[in-house]
Image 1 (cartoon, rainbow, N blue to C red):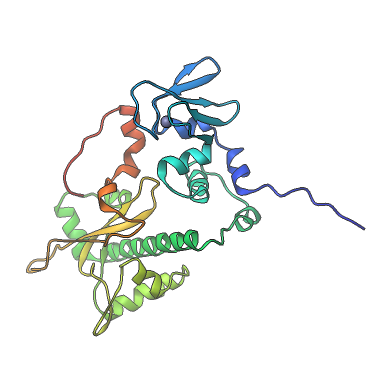
Image 2: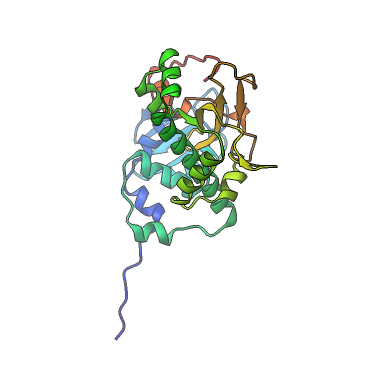
Length: 273
Ligand code: ZN
């Protein structure tokens, strides 16, 4: 006999049914109520008089200035310049939405660019986590942070770590990454490992590691600082520019602080990490 299954809900519908577009947009725009909709200055195009509107009952936004419009996911993808899938997954994370496995896997993108992005971010996250683990096990690295007045809580909040050096360390990083399906060529592609005449090494070795997050909170690059007496190498090395890491477009600490900057309407910009 014929069995007709109900149409599966896709990832985008699933997320949209669980977040309010007002909550999403309010992280970027100061909205004022105007009858049944809300108004504010458009975060997509520069403007002084508000022509950006949100209709919460319809779950959409529309800007009369630049004619951009769509749902909460389209909005996030537009302002963060990411794919709709990345925007949807970041909303799930931000709003603590558990996504059933069948919805996640049925929405998996097969386009190469999307899987390349995911691999790049996975490599960066694996390296950041490995460096955090090293920091927790390194007396000298923790002593340095303490001496600079960085508490354990601050170090955790900013994912500060320490990159070990030597062949054993490289092997340990490769093993740690493999457990997360991140392979050597992913680490090389993300400029975390390099091929030298004596095998693989990291330009970040024997440095305190500052993972740099994009506005959505994905680790997309690193700054590494020397910290040991007698180390005469350049004080900092940074990740090489990459399609997903353009230093001049990133502000360190913004991901962690954008909500409070928005609510306080104040930001303090300082040099360095
Ligand atoms: Zn606009």
